[in-house]
Length: 619
Image (cartoon, rainbow, N blue to C red):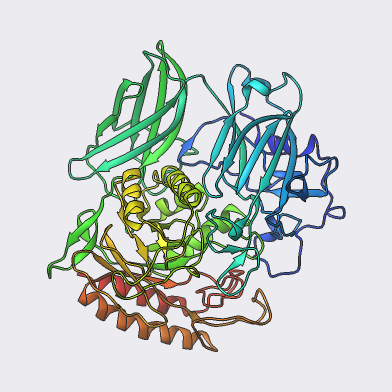
């Protein structure tokens, strides 16, 4: 295995020379930053294994300093580069060292070099991108190896055929990104940020890495638990499988401390072999279910054998849990976890950072928000119109945080009617056929890339009529991609009787504007209690919240009054609630924490006690 520090140095030094703070100021800009910004360096730029759900022992990070240029979209490859950029931070971010805007008529070019370790000879080499926003054209040694569109899903290319034996390999990317000037999903990003719309993010914003694989390897897998029959079904997608190849799946006792990077330990509690391409079904002895109070994870090991010889092996993990619609003792329709009603309460989590924008400064920072969310007494997060790196969901699995996963929106609701309190009140956004086709492509890729993670319990295709279209068809599509989660068709309005959930938004106090006992009724957004904290603001003016106060005590008092109202709604049938929001974001000051994560605005012990009381009120 290549030493991680050595691999990083290989990746950043061959074409780029030695990094100099004097030659390339880093970080760029003069905005507020988090405490983790000072830990970021060219040799320590997200060095962790990017895919914790499926780990191989050999890999090489390509994160670090690359060359970059911003040119007109129609220009060819740059003859010289503008400077250096720290991957995987978007070019607009402070931590990239660049902090420049990319317009919809621009192209962002990247260049780096790497050398393939000699120990990988005879293997296929995959070049993996965890996320690039939006259109990426990838060249290796001046050969186009592939094109990918979509800013939120991982993708990879087999680059074996274009490698130069024993030589340095040149990697070049051309990225274009129209953000909100096209039909592409972009969430809260806009080219001219204001109010609830934030700074655009362009290019590489998650890890880039190399991985040697065999001719005959595990491409992906999907473990589906059936707690009613103590069974786990594992569907395995293999690359280049041959007739007679055998897959072996082993399940291990794990617990909340299980880490797939270390691999499972001890003897497997279940093992089964099957012909490649066949689903594998394991009986789970002494089944231990996953829940927020007991987030138990099983170790998983998948091996492929050819003619009796091991040719590929990956470490992973799985969980036994069930999300469904149930009735409570009073006949209200509820969300059930492991067949029991459980009130789900969590913050609206935007996932933005003042120094990294879409990208957390470090892995510790990425986990920090989740740990604090649990400390605050919540058991759920609504991941708002953004998709996070795999490690974020891995930590949710470990910490016992349920996730409602939004699809990043493709537009606002400026060209359609947003109905908020009655069925049939709203209208569809005028989405082109090309926009619809791309929506289905990207939403399908996101679901298939993230459905592995057991923390995800609800899919949310649309928010507040932003770019909403053909709702019933989109729900059917979502169900076809993954039928194991609930579907919240339209969070906050433009309701149709489909999916599983009716989701009301009401600010600032909790209030339900529509009830339908044939569905799960939830309060998808409320709160927004604002408190600007001097010295921790993104900008000096135009800061706003739905309501604003002057002290942490006032904010906590108001939150407690909202809690009393919410408990009354729970008694009437409300099954989940989402409070706005985890942190301040740019001009929004309604976070539980400031944007730089340096101040928790509420009394934390009171907040935790209040949230526990809310969750416990559903009997």
